[in-house]
Amino acid sequence: MAVHRPATGRRRMSSATSQRAAEEIDAVERRRFLADVLEGLSRPPKSLPAKYFYDERGLSLFKSISETPEYYLTRSEMSIMQGSAGEIAATIGPGCLLIEYGSGAPDKAALLLASLERPAGHISIDISKEHLDDAVASLEKAHPELEIVGLRADFTSAFQLPQLHTAAQRRVIYFAGSTIGNFEPSAASALLRGMQRHLRSGDGLLIGIDLKKEIDRLERAYNDTQGLTEAFNRNILVRINRQLGADFDPGSFEHRAFYSHQHDRIEMHLVSRRQQTVHVGGSKIHFLRGESIHTESCYKYDLAEFAAWAAKLGFALEKVWTDSAKNFGVVFLTLDSGALTSDLDAPPRDETE
Ligand code: AVI
Image (cartoon, rainbow, N blue to C red; front, top):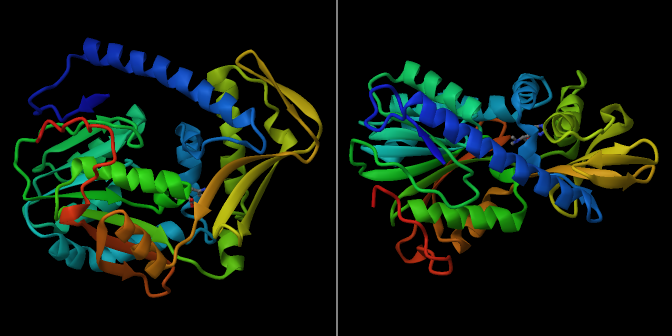
């Protein structure tokens, strides 16, 4: 875990130290990446963790997807933030420390920070140093007056929040983009429980969710006519080849994305066009013709069901904002006083506690 602070930050690392830290983390990440890939590909049905979509090319493809006419999610969420940032900020209140899970939406966070009354600072958390550096730079440009800190960490695991200079009146975790929809229900519950390690009673969670809608629209959003989602899906194989020395032929896997009524989710798959064997990190992975790798799930939510699920985890619904077409919801939840998790292993204490 490494902390990236602006030049004025109190604990700026020397570049040699930060370089060493980055290399160490990269080696650890590579081992983890290989273990995750082998685990997913060695059990039936085969799968790959969607978090590995986001290398540089994956991130750039996702950005292009979000600009396609079919992919309404990003536009809908942005329109909510543009239209309601003032109201959202008023609901959050003054002196807020904004803790952003993922660094893919600095424009939305910047909008919110501009509306918040005397924000105490902003922390972006991301596993990727490049994404984090870009996000921190863009937020610093938009808000030079504010303390902006990048924390390189996997927010699905335990991590410690760094100490900021200004004491916060309230902490709010910001989890934009319906990224929660890419977590299986049990992992999503674990994530919300994990968030509680960084919150106190009355603190908040501002979360973007994609709402249920006509199947046709959902399926079109994941099958854009420019083939960008197809390239995004296949890029995970390109990344495995490059970073793990595997020999996937990405063209021999077909992109398939469809709505599953059983699970209320879009599923993305890569389906082998032929019988083949692929070599990954010394292991041989056999594919039958037509055999698929489940690469991503994108859950779609009903607001009432989402609120009921969050309530079970100790988060009370405060307010919801939707776009005019009710495509997308931005939901503000607060942590109930009695909800602080007791069923977790002893959580690491934040430096701010
Ligand atoms: C990042 N995440 C919310 C996107 C989604 O819609 O689930 C990822 C994505 N996958 C295909 N297109 C976009």
